[in-house]
Length: 102
Image (cartoon, rainbow, N blue to C red):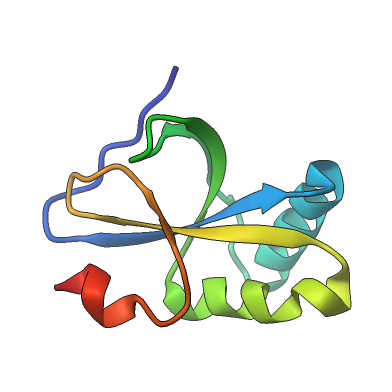
């Protein structure tokens, strides 16, 4: 098992493919390449709820939000995760930004 450690004070955003995972992974990899992210990071990570998940690291919240908004059009599904400091990634929902970052 690989567990990614996040530097203290840093916020990381992740996409977790659900549903048709193969299609979702293909869409995410293709779109990250289009966003000029040459080597997208996909890792098996231990999340805050104790479950291991394959998460795609996003460069920032804005990129993750683009994926969220494109789900219907590109016919894929994701869950959003956030990690602050050395915390394990936790499921995140729109509207929780201020609560999670403070």
